[in-house]
Length: 367
Image 1: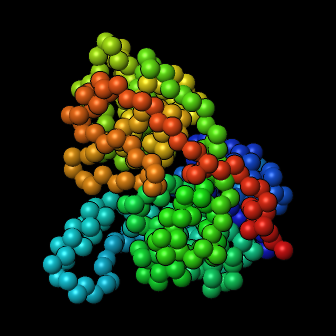
Image 2 (image 1 turned 60 degrees about the horizontal axis):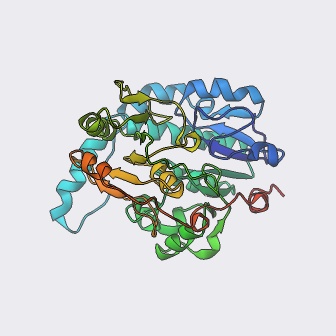
């Protein structure tokens, strides 16, 4: 249980987390005494597993049941902005309809409701979380500021030219909606965020928990193609269609679902499902991905890397400047893999540095 005046890490219910290790913050819970952990409203089962450490609890516990029953079911996205250019109204309406087609609005509203009640009840000194600048995070920052709680956002994902949600221009109040401090994986991201208008004194390079600062070369010219499926089911379906179009006796595919979004994989003699992470796999001839950090893992590990260019949506480029995977369509994967490609040679230290525990201690100090 968290206590007033403590420092709390807000995390997702990742399957790789356990009472002594967190998928987002590594061994930080044991390296900095007194840290607490609270789990996002994404998974009830994760809370049961993680709460055994005696310092982890769930946001769900702070929600009001009446709010869940009588308010949440009626939540939907609405546009509250006045647009001068009426020619883009159809785009706004399209986005609202697509977003309102699922339960995202209700889920975000429940998260915001629970986190604000937790902040008022627990009054932590400082909070830190994997930062992507989503709406619930902006609401968290505003609520924390009202209560005098320090906020630390830890860069969670790649930050490429299309990662607009991480820019202060994507927030209603600009820089004011960003956390007090942003801790980054490496210097390349700091330069990019400065270009986007984030003040340099709000940022520090703290190192990478999720990816090794000195990755092992995992390339093997005659090995299988590692397929890292997306968090988006639609993107994963198109990726698998490309794989089934390409499979053959001379090439094998190791297919791994996203850890938070399982996907049904139809196996064959050349398409094999795996639960082993790319970071623990050697002898890979190529990496094929759609979204997320898998692409940057492949490139930094010296493996030819290919990104799906989806047929029905914009293909988001999330890799930072200096890194670009080759984009392929579903129909173009076979030809791309048939070409001889030199494995990339990249200076990893530009993008990921070892974890600097002193930077973390300084920013999470409860003094």
